Length: 213
Image (cartoon, rainbow, N blue to C red; front, side, top):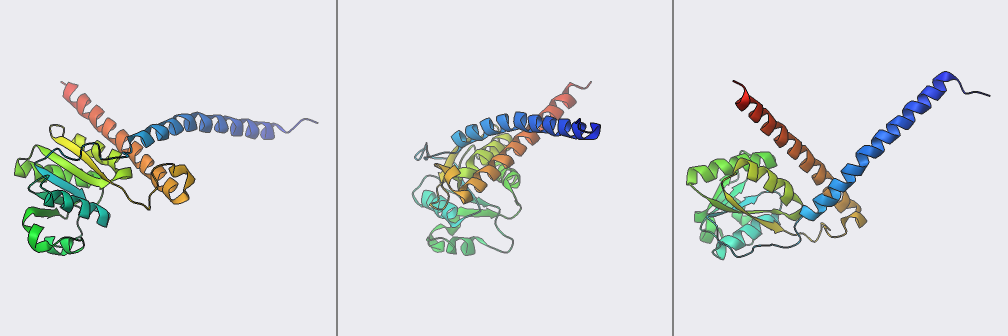
């Protein structure tokens, strides 16, 4: 007995959708593997001094790491991007293990950023006002690929040294074995892809505009 035509068409469309999904899954998975390689496993350059240290808010460990670097003389000033409105420098340092009296003179904060793109724009504007040429960028290890992508686009002429912060609660090694870490890494990978597509489109539109007589 032959199947109805509409049934065969629906089955054919479903099979085609499955093939399309498979073709998209292969490069997506390959990209995820490449992204895993971009997530730093160590601080590759822990000693080179820079004009300033930049900390992206999002965890106490980041702030403590930045203040440790400042206290140890890796730079003479520090900028914290994405601080909540109403929080001043002393209140911010009080959230860390450091003494506000010792370090508040050398720390500035920005309240304008709400995401990584905003962090890059806010930091670029601050660095330009200060005349800075090199920055040590402090953020979480899994967040570093997207951070460096945005920062290098916002500050193409600056020397940027990544300084990842590692958390025992996020398993970046063998992350696929841990549901919470898997969701975090896959989510960050998706945001990284979207950021790359946005920057590629922006560069393409800029090139097209420059080429227009």
